[in-house]
Image 1 (cartoon, rainbow, N blue to C red):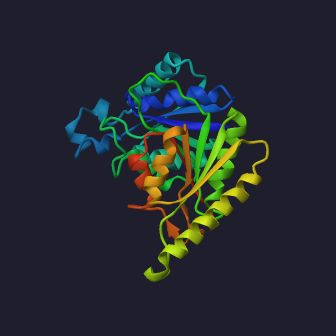
Image 2 (cartoon, rainbow, N blue to C red):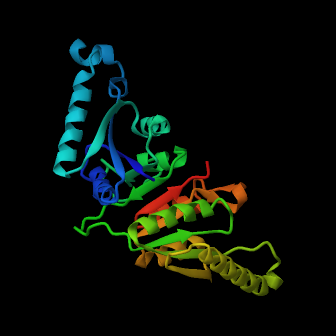
Image 3 (cartoon, rainbow, N blue to C red):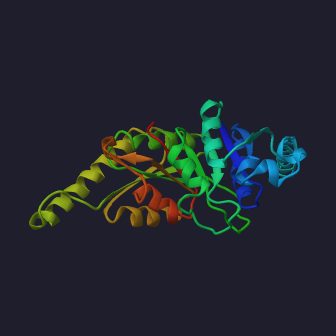
Amino acid sequence: MQKFLIPLDGSKTGESALKWGKFLAQKGKKLELLRCYHPLASLYSFPDFATPPPVSYDLSGFARFARQYLEEVAKENELEATLTVKEGDPAETIVIYDETSDSDAILMATHGQGGLGKWLLGSTATKVVRASKKPVLLIRPDESDAEPKLEKILVCLDGSELAERGLSRAADLAREFGASLKLYRAVDETPYPMSDIQTVLLKAEESARDYLAEKATELEGLKVETTAQLAPVVDGVLAQAKDCDLVVMTSHGYSGFRRWILGSIAEAVMQRCDKPLLIVHER
């Protein structure tokens, strides 16, 4: 990931992602700031009648103010970045623009103008995560002045090749920033009868432990620790994330037959995780 697209909505909450943008730029990552503004038709039911002609027919003022905002933000945060302004619904515009841009990933805050402090269902961040074909690094706004760091990365695995795509991304970041990796796999379900549940779970846990150990041996030159345990997946991920600086997971696993969609593991982690979260898609 050599270039990050950073969507901004004009709020201080949205700008919280810029700290991480500046942090990543120290390792040569390129940045592009994107400001979307709603088309006038979405603000007025009858734009031709509700506003004077200079406003309803000329949107150059919106674009000019949006670009001015980006220039001020870049200057204030001492960022060297490409500045882009687009008209349209934020989530849709971000995804469509990113598909044709030369960025490798999207970097954005978990919420913007609402200031509710949670990843709300239907929010711009959630929509972008669902629709994007590129990795999305999501930063949860923190009221503290703590600077970003990348010393330990948690990688969530489920045994599938798809989930291991996140491992590849995490390994690249670990090498660039000198970070260690924590590979984690939770075992919390089984198709076997209840009479055999304990034996099956113990075998599954042992198998998960062996799997992680094998993955660790493939990561030459990196400091790696592994943890496999019987635990609810979401609770397990959140507990393991406490001493990490970044959580990495794929958008779905289980050999591609089950998607991490609405109400799924990935979105449950998104709702509750207070650490930066990198979502890597299989697409």
